[in-house]
Amino acid sequence: MNTLDMLIGAQRLRDLVFSKLAAPGFAAFGEGSRILLPTRLSGAQHMSVGAKVLIGAGSWLIVPEQHLEGPNIVLHDRVRMNSTSISAVARVEIEEAVAIARGCYISDHSHGFASPDVAVRDQPIDRVAPVLIERGAWLGQNVVVLPGVTIGHGSVIGANSVVRDDVPPRTVAAGVPARVLRELA
Image (cartoon, rainbow, N blue to C red; front, side):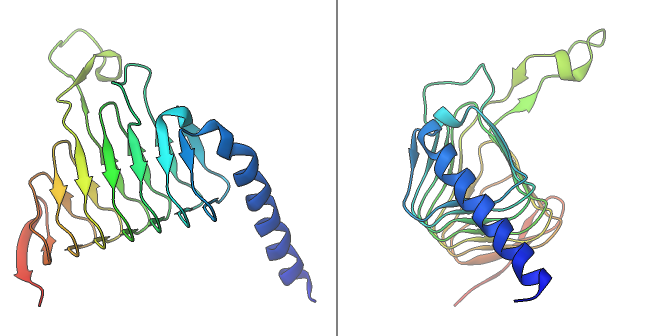
């Protein structure tokens, strides 16, 4: 076994141990699910993770203190995400077998910016609306999903898109803002 194989093995063992230690802190954490480090978690007790979920390195899952009754982030079985940020105060639900590429951002709320004398980061949360990404959808790299959006089952969202409106099932959508480009068979 060469040095690289040993390092990869050590990293996998570290991630497995971390996943096992972190699991009791979640509302639910399914069999065979893994969290790859480094990952940032805040409010894990308000998150439900299904079986065989992969939360890739560089991901950030957060349920802010002003959240509604949860679980607020729900990842169904076999969700795969890489360097993904999810923030939920109401509910972000990602159904079975959804694939999320690197750099995606999904949120069910926005920061307020009505007061000109207060920094945006210090203003209250605004526009809270649940997000649903249905089974088998695929989000390309750097996709942004805004509050209140439903992405239909089996849909594909092109890289660098901003999804602000619902996307029907079995369609390809892309752009800023994302628009349906075609239907899938």
